[in-house]
Amino acid sequence: MIAARGVSVQFGGLAALSDLDFAVPRGTVKAVIGPNGAGKTTLFNVISGIQAPTSGSVLLDGEDITSRPPHERVRRGLARTFQNLQVFSGMSVLENVVVGMHARLHAGVFSALLRLPSGRREEASARHRARALLGRVGLAGKADLPVSALSFGDLKIVEIARALASEPTVLLLDEPTAGLPASEASRVAEVIRAINTEGVTVLLVEHNMRVVMSVSHDILVLNFGRRIAEGDPASVRAHPDVITAYLGADIEAAHCA
Amino acid sequence: MHAQISTTTYRALAMLWVLLIALPWITPNNYWLNLATLWLTNVLLVASLNLLMGYSGQISLAHGAFYGIGAYVSGVLAAKYGVSPWIGLPLALAATGLVAFAVGWPTLRLRGHYLAMATLGFNAIASVLFVEWRDWTGGPNGLVNIPPYTLFGVKLDSDRAFYFLALAAVGVALVLLLNLLDSRIGRALRALSTAEVGAECMGVNVHRYKILVFVVSAMLAALAGCLYAHHNAFVSPESFDFLVSTMLVVMVALGGTGNWWGAFLGALIYTLLPELLRSFGDLELLVYGVSLVVVLLFFPRGLGGALDLLCERIASRFRARESNIHAAGAAVNRARPDS
Image (cartoon, rainbow over all chains, first blue to last red; front, top):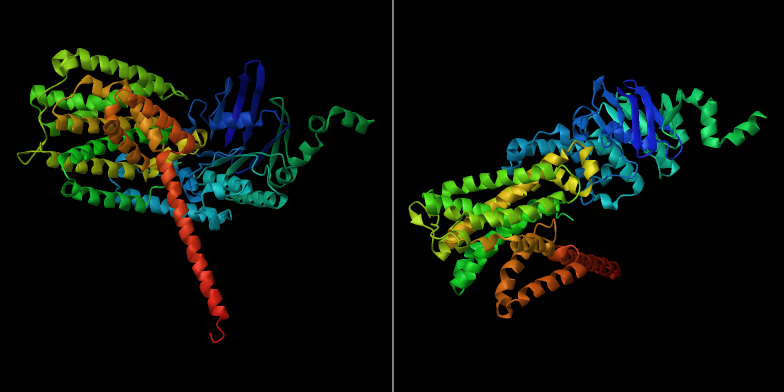
């Protein structure tokens, strides 16, 4: 379970997040939606540890991880993808995924320097698992290509595979279908559902409403860094504040009139 | 940016070393052999800095000083206290590693080029200490009477014997370095040098790895320093001053930052250019500057990058020719009525 308690982030005079409270129960999928600038990516950065909150705390399975650096959060089972990609250029697709296993592998400096057999075995099995993981997300044929040869859509999926490689209990997906054609978006939605069926808790920022509605158990709506609605897809869709935020007050007024 | 480390890299290194073993029988005189020895220690120096610059995106402006600490620790222990250079070697590496750790720990926490600034200052301090700790270092006149390495009671002070020692030492160091790069740690380093935030969110302790790479890099420079001190039998402060540190940064860039073979090319230039330009005196610096600008203008990935490009071109032309031959063969076969 991942939760935020009273999280605020202040950039100078701008409140990117104000006193935000929410929790994603274990094994569920929660989507965070909201207009641009609502604070969704800031929220992800706070949860993954890149951005320290001005106040408030982040809890992973009930434990306060607010002061833990990002790499320790990964060790504790938190993984994420990035809206604007953070792939490791100059590496193959397979190697990118193996980097995701970093926290689960053990070979240290001496093992590396002396090329100890235990380290080599670990490497071989990591590569093997990475290949299997790429097969699961439908990229088996592209494992040995340099990442520079892949389309933006494929790279989004590489990032998901790389995050899964760290064996997370909680997965943060930052706009996994942004910039993808509809066919690929539905493929990503399938992957998300499959990940969740295996017991991984998912927190998702997404603009594609078809994907949001089809994968999430719960939706959190942000606007100007505040929660304006939260609940199951049907109730959120009908929530007046959500309609205002998305479509504008005038249309709502016209609708009511 | 990073040349892929593979079994081919190991093989190429082994082949190069086999050729280098034969060198003493090929060179016309010891002048060339001594240049080759100098080149080997320079390969180690440039490769050590290349590790830092290419794999952590940081710049050290004190590699001359680390080179010097290695040389002075081992040299002083041997010349003043009669400590065997073989014992001085690990002590020199440990001392340099500790110093690098102390310099790197506070600065590598910060994003940006704070290490460059800290090392810039550190090299100045080290240079002053090399001069002022007169009782130990011999001051500006240098440290004299540094004994050579001995092996089974035999002094390795002939040019040929020392060449082989340097070949062995640098070879071992380079293999260890390759091993490190071709591992979980090397992969994490390549990851953090291309996407730091991404690496951090994949579980890579970026701060720890940056320090690790800086310490290892400084220790490799110290190893070069030990070899230099016991070969030359004499060291003086100006061999380790800020100008040397700057030159090393230039040689990494010239060879190609993050390019494995770039270090060999950078070291080659660093070794040969002073010999070629000796008659020009102070013009040497100007030529260095101009060549750096020219290389980086036309080959932003350095000479190593240019070499990669050349190899790639030749390979693709070769492939194209091969497929042409195949196509022609198929056409001939089709044209032949009886086949």
